[in-house]
Image (cartoon, rainbow, N blue to C red; front, side, top):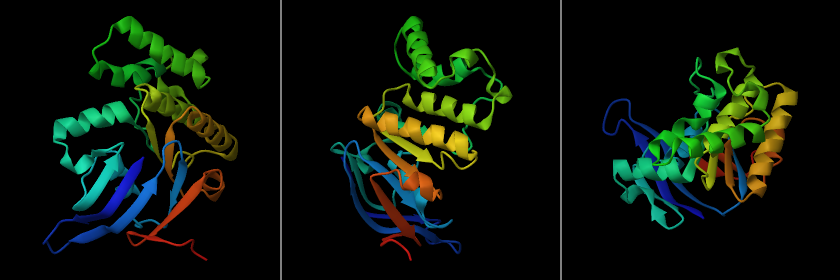
Amino acid sequence: MIEIKNLTKIYNVNKENEFQALSDINLIINNNEMVAIMGKSGAGKSTLLHILAGIDRATEGDVIIDNINLSSLKKNQLSEFRNNQVGIIMQDFQLMEYATTLENVILPLYFRKMKNKKRLEAASELIYGVGLENHIKKPVNLMSGGEKQRVAIARALITSPSIILADEPTGSLDSENSQHIIDMLKRINKKGKTVIIITHDKDLANHMDRIIFLKDGKVIDEPN
C-alpha cells in the first residue's frame, strides 16, 4: 500500500523564484490498484510521480510504501529501493537509442549480482512477452514509437517491481498503438502490480480503477 501524508513540495525555497508544486497531498493507493493522475500542465502530476519513484524528495510530509518511509532513506537506500520496487515508464522512453532492444531491457539487471545467463534469460522472456521477439537485436533508433514504448515497458518490468509508474505512456502514440499499451498495462496489473499513470488521455484514464485529479498542486474533485 502507498500512503501519502501531508505531502508538500517547494522548489527554490526562500528564493525569488520559489514555487510550490504540491500542497498538503493526502492519498492512499492500494496494492494492485490501477490509478490515473490527471490535471492540466503545471498541476503537479510529474512532481508527484517523481517523489513516488524516489527520484525527488518532498519538502514536507511522507510517502510510505509497504511500510517503508521514503523520507527516512539515505540516497543510496533510495536508489536501491527504486531499483527493487519501482518500474518507471517515461513519455520520451529514455532508451539508449543506438543500443539494441536486448541491451536496453537488460540494463537494470547489471546493478544486481546475478549470472549473465540469468540476465539474458530474464530479458529475453520479457521481450517475448511484449511481442518484440523479432526485434531483440534491433537498435531502438530504427523502431517505431509503439515499439519503443514496449521496450520501455519491458525494461520497467525487468527487476520484478511491485509498482509501475508511467508518465504519459500513450502521449506520443496513435490510437492503435495506444490501445496496445493500455491492454499491456492492464495485463501487468492483473499479475499483481500496482499501476499509477500520469495522463491527459481520458480514454486511458477511464480504463483505470480510479482517477485522481490535481489542480495547482492539490487534489480536487472531478472537474466540470
